[in-house]
Image 1 (tube, rainbow, N blue to C red):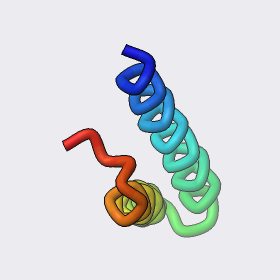
Image 2 (cartoon, helix red, strand yellow):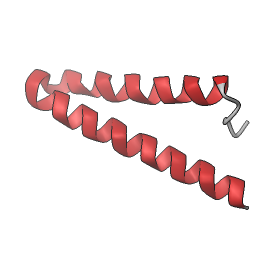
Image 3 (tube, one colour):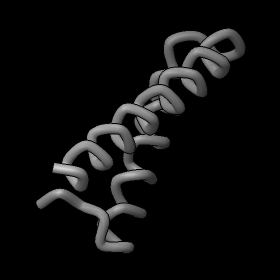
Length: 56
């Protein structure tokens, strides 16, 4: 149970960082700021897979 909660909080934190970075970039480059959010999520996912933190 503790591992699942930690994974959920990690995912939530990553999504909040992605949303914040996308919003900040969105003020400068408009809707293309969503790409910044995607990059943050993909980088976090790749890091989790590399370090063995994936849930699958």
